Amino acid sequence: MCGAGAVLRVVLDVNQIVSSLLSTRGLQRQLLDAWRQRAFLLLLAPGQIDEVAEVLARPKIGKKYPIPPEDLEGFLHLLRGDALPPPEAHGPGVCRGPDDDRLLRRAAAGEANYLVTGDGARPAVGRHRGVTILTAREFLALLAA
Image (cartoon, rainbow, N blue to C red; front, side, top):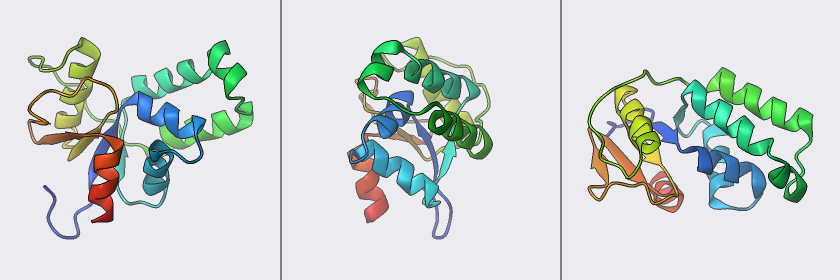
């Protein structure tokens, strides 16, 4: 845990970032708003930003949630310019899938305090190599406390 005055370092799963753009009132939007207000440092691997772009470019998403291209490019530019890239890391898996393991290892290598995810990938321990895994609701409650 960070000491008093230390800035939290947080990795957001791609599903949290995508959801933040698709709903203006959801918990994920509150996460991104907190980041924009500098409540924490965002750590994102370059591949995560590419995945956000790929998901949001899917025709099915574009049909249901029309995001103007300039808004999407502006958001991706913000992520590329402002999020810190955690280093690549290797090690044993503790999650249900290799992508989740890779993300958790990167979070640990980037000295993240938290990994915020909404999918079922959370390991049963809830904490791994100094990284606490939380849902958006849990993390927002922590920020509010």
